Length: 442
Image 1 (cartoon, rainbow, N blue to C red):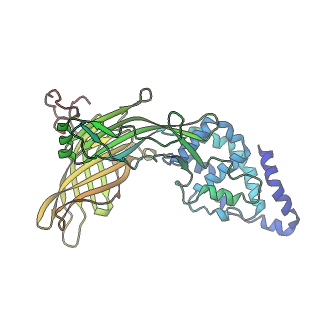
Image 2 (cartoon, helix red, strand yellow; image 1 turned 60 degrees about the vertical axis):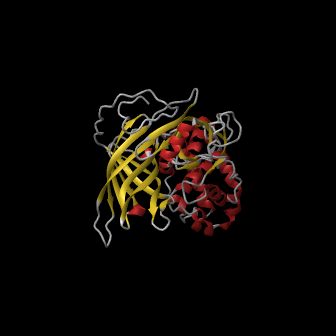
Image 3 (cartoon, rainbow, N blue to C red; image 1 turned 135 degrees about the vertical axis):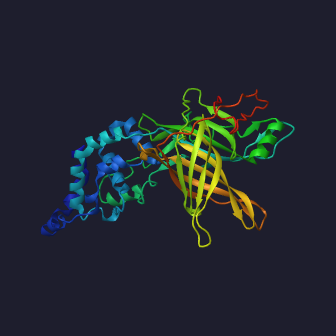
């Protein structure tokens, strides 16, 4: 492979050979590439980025590509482009430095191959959805579902993935800039992948639930009264790369729950399980959770009890100090649903607005940062929206999304209270509420 790359660069080197002493002086200059540790960039590349994850899976499934000189050179440029503040246009001071850099970089091929093979890649990821409901049809007892809105998640792949989300550089453009004037093809690298469904047809990750529910009127009424015209879903997906060298990535839904969510209940409406790939593994959120809502100058401390994918919690909210009032604590009530790495929470607390006290509600869509988990804490992040009272319109209104962050801390989970005996369900809804959650079979 090294001989092949020397040949690819040889025409450029010969063209510059006649520069004599001036070329020798230029060759002592140092470009931006010299400061990049490509091995470290390969180790620390986040597998939460959908393209990076697909790329590493592709290399693992097709290890021979690392012996292809053009692929390898482009891979080096891709890694350099991930480096913070890397300047593609100033990568090399001159042509001699560029050729010397890539010639010597071929000695790193075995180490890079080992690093790619050893990085932890979670081939399953969660996506949270907001699912609006449409007008109920009393004649057919059908509740149509509107278009699901994906919120957060580990990069919902649709159509194709692209290289660019992990750094401020566009790696494809970077390769075109750095390799200009050589015979190396900048396109000899999967800068994007075609995403296909399980049957091999083109398409992104599908929402696995039908767009309608066969639901008795009494159940539909209960949903509307308890949860409004909005449902939620958390769906787990599995990705895998084709092993025939084609640049295709399969995205397969494996597990999911469609549910209503309030501050005091999580009601499951429908479940999805892949016939062979289903591996439900709800994340555990019973450790103490601390969260910060920067836009609200508020911090929260919460504790949850959990059974299956459903949880209920309580805690305190500390509001930010203002020029009119000191920071104060208020009690929080809430519930949550979880996937393998994602969660949706609905929390409420009393808030004084004008001369009256009304509840404020917040819905949080979060993910656990599994790459940063330690023995003492597990960081979480995501976005949230508020449902708060508007004095002018005299109604509750939803705000836009804002970011939040926090962490689960090591600690003892709250002790569960003894659950009351459960009567047989009178509905096709799984109507478990917070009073029932301890000890229930989910």
